[in-house]
Image 1 (cartoon, rainbow, N blue to C red):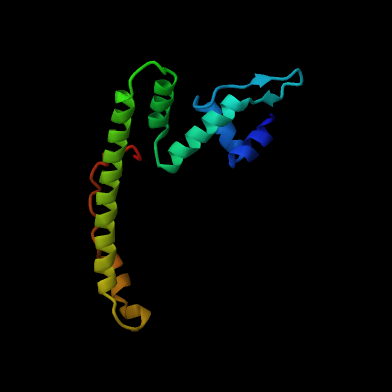
Image 2: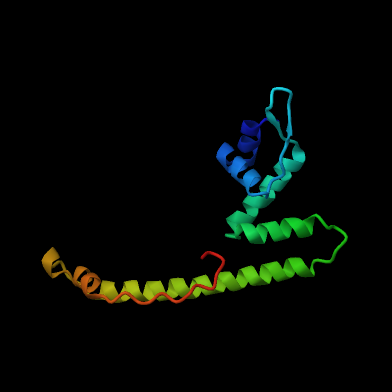
Length: 143
């Protein structure tokens, strides 16, 4: 199948297919005499795998690791569990960060409980006076 057909069946864009190919997550397809890419069922299967991993917010490096492990069917799945454990730790860290963000937003929201004029809005005053916290180094794969 051609790239447009693959993208349609996999429910993504042609640009996504090309991007995953460029990143080395999707193997390069065979080419026709006219230099068109021709994809097979193995490309569709791998693309679906990649998209499912992305739906779980996995990084390209995590996906790359899983793909390398999947290409070794005789091995045990301990390394796969390790990738997932690490990803779950990233999710836990992100939840902590988002919880802190929500607390900051709630504090600002509490500063404005009435229909005052904009010039007296506690949220706007709080935003203007707020000292930006030094962002701690993020320990997640999101950067």
